[in-house]
Image (cartoon, rainbow, N blue to C red; front, side, top):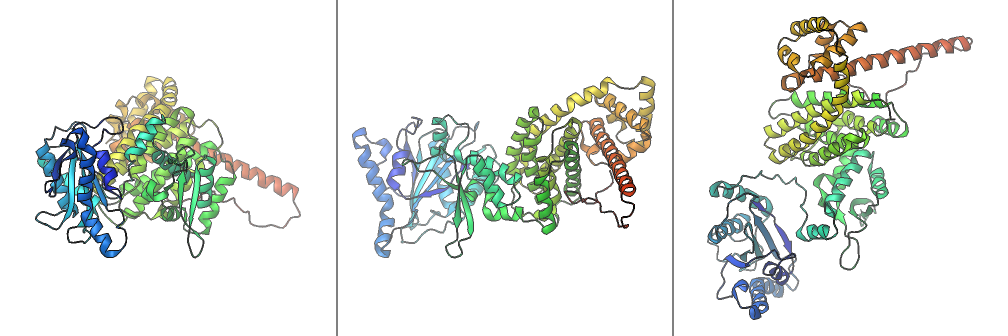
Length: 586
């Protein structure tokens, strides 16, 4: 059961909608199911057609009487005096009678402070039913005694009451809210999107693109520049005294009002964490060094394999942090920061990944936007490394990086599983559900990325005798997981990878010992596949390190032979684009 509290200033206009045919003639038999006290006022839904407009005006005047008296006494208008709360059952719920809906309405106005039980001086209200699955509760928010109601937090209180009603009436139990969900599109917004043939409303479209822009940007100037490049109109809000930017609003090119003026949505109206203050918290790095690193990332191209390996390493480090805490402890702010940085990495991955993977990864990123927000305030400095790794993907050059992409997506899947569990442990029902939805899409992308490489490795599997020897190494080194590893369809691919590592001078038992210290094996459906990507990434890293070392030795040799008279100075090693950090051994 879903309530949606809002306010307005036109009682007669709202009544015309509630008792009218609807925007698409969807209203059937509009009528009042409950009310504060009608005192002989006619139900507009139960009068002859020629009396309909008169009944609407009479009802509006009746509801507005306390409002007009207060305006006369104070000499000014009462702002936003119309209180409106549609309440809808979930799809698949049973049919509720008028009597049951009347009781729902009385409980909602009581719980929100609009009209508490037994309060004869409460606000005037009615509940209108014009469809099988919902009612509209309308009130004028001035009490009979002339005071405004004490209804602060009415949306949250209505949600809590609906959870109790669901239990008592045997309805589908929806997940409780925590005031972190973005504002849902209004009925007119949805109708406009349908008329224009758009999949999403302007509000939702702007929200998705604002998240993607924030993931790619280093600071607010770049954030606004990215949005502008997408054809989005940006309107900054300036402080009246200092003239500094204190907020912003966005609009699409084709979203206009009746006068043809663009309709703007503030950042906070798109989502709580898209307000300018929250974005500044995210953009503000720990120190100048971090900001300099970010600049380096955006001014140079990096090897694609190196970028994906870096992302893989930071995802594994984040996984260790998320799974390393207790049920609820002081690391929560750091974990929430990892979730926010992971949300950015998903958006950047959707841009950087091979084309055939992008649709699923983008769907995962959009779904995870909801899981990114909770009541826990993030310590964004704790996730600088993961955030910078995600931005590095945007600067990577194209290359043969299929193995690295699959490895990074595998690590992303495990981090996402850990975040689902983390949210569930803390009672973040909506976030856990959103993360689970994101996981479906991310797993599909990971499996698509992994399939070609695994098939290629499996086709080159060593002889049965060699496989038996490698299987014995698995049983001796990883006895707790050996049965699942050897039964995994990816075992032939793993045997090939182990044989290749052995040819490069890495004994299988030592290799497995280095790789098996991963918590992921406890929850992995495909443990052999996990080890394949760990091994491929580690091997590629060793090869890359040897190549860099050889290049450095060659450069030093050339320098010494051509600059014999140069004074001896300490060699200055190039600094990595993103600060490294120690991680648990893999």
